[in-house]
Length: 391
Ligand code: NAD
Ligand code: ZN
Image 1 (tube, helix red, strand yellow):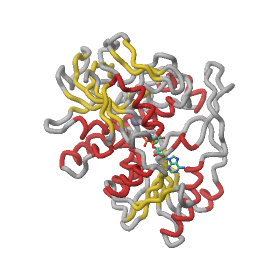
Image 2 (tube, helix red, strand yellow; image 1 turned 45 degrees about the vertical axis):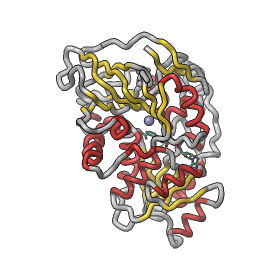
Image 3 (cartoon, rainbow, N blue to C red; image 1 turned 90 degrees about the vertical axis):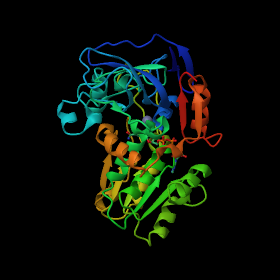
């Protein structure tokens, strides 16, 4: 089959690789119909994520048709059309039982590495390095789905791929970031980053009752989408100081909650020397966690700072004094997609929400290298790319 393979920073290639096979009786094999490139893939593309190996298959946002199921799979059949959460979860461990799906104890067999780095083992993630289990991703013609009775959700007839694809990750991610803000009627929420995750965080903040959402970015078409499609007030941080502008727009008090939907783009990490098998050196720019620092400083006393943006390794120069003395709540983490997938699917079906508005590019799988390039560099007004294998 054809698959998008990582070969180093800024080096994605579409290659012919062996088809996936069932490795476990609880596995299913999917034929991918749509798969997206995520801002999280850019951290890999940028070379920030250690333990990628040349040839690793990318992609954790995908959906498709079941073509094969293992002998213990009960809920899925050949021919079912499903969307798949990006965390791989067993469904029965301590964490899955507590609705903490992205912290599953049984899906990251290489967890010894994260154990060493972080003191714990998060769930496996498709196409997201050997830190996250080394699973082949879904930017491919086919993918193996472990715990097939737990993650995949059947798509009701009448909904297009574009309406449901983002249930795999970025819609629940934007939603969880907003839910973590404990929004009360009348609240103002500030959101850094108007990428796809930021757009869904804006929509979700309004769905959860925010009165005002203020979105911050520098890319004009992303700010315009935040204003026009998602309904936010906007700040271009290249034109004005975002912190000052937020103060002014909130009568000096600051937003009730602040969401960081940027993450690693704003800083780097360094794991060199911490574990000698980690060969990649990742940039260390500890004085540049702009967004997180700004969010903590801007947030009103007693407010919440919610991180959707991905962080890894070590970050310092975080104004903990401000966070502590203002009594802030900090919330963060990989999204518990399983928790949100069905309720958000219901909202899409009811017509409350159509996530397809973020898609600017629909391309064949073969165009993935160019797609990564334009998505990363915000060229051709690119906001979200959907790759269509077999077209
Ligand atoms: P993206 O790269 O398309 O969007 C990031 C946006 O942030 C860009 O529009 C960029 O211009 C803007 N930005 C950069 N610096 C900024 C600054 N200083 N102030 C304001 N805006 C700034 O990515 P995306 O797909 O929207 O993803 C956003 C983040 O969410 C990434 O870090 C991604 O890894 C993360 N993510 C997390 C989860 C999760 O489970 N928590 C899931 C998916 C994505
Ligand atoms: Zn993603």
